[in-house]
Amino acid sequence: MITLKGTNLYLRALEPEDLEFVHSIENDEAIWNVSNTQTPYSKFLIRQYLENAHQDIYEAKQLRLAICKNNSEEAIGLIDLFDFDPRNKRAGIGIVIQNLTERGHGYGAESLELLINYSFNQLNLHQLYANIGVENQTSIKLFTTFGFQKCGVKKDWNLIENTYQDEALFQLINPFI
Image 1 (tube, rainbow, N blue to C red):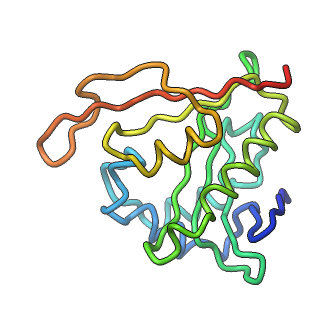
Image 2 (cartoon, rainbow, N blue to C red):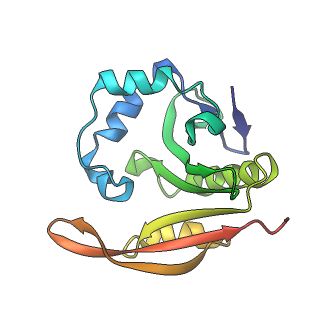
């Protein structure tokens, strides 16, 4: 089981007990715009996903970890590596802290730092990338704090509430390679 420990939180592999939490995040329409979700997920599908969560990143091409405060087993968010491409040594990265009351306390920054370090030091990735809506200034600030640079804009990329919005592509090249 993967566990990455920080000062105030840790990242851990998903467990079957996370069913309700993952179900609530995947079905929270308020965050569908940032996760590119368009339809609700059933508990059956999420249970199947959790049953296969034991696959390593080389098999699944994805790594999803629960974000937990150090004093709790309960998840407050999720952080993902997706589109894992071992040949080109790159992956996409995404993060969500579920409750508004947990945002703004540095959990996203600490989680992102842990996963960046894991990606570069353990997986030996050359680069990470993030797709962020241009109006999502909170995420842009978070990712640029860690050195992600905007390298392009996809015009009219996402249809949100009947309006097309641009999405920016941010990259972080591993400074140690």
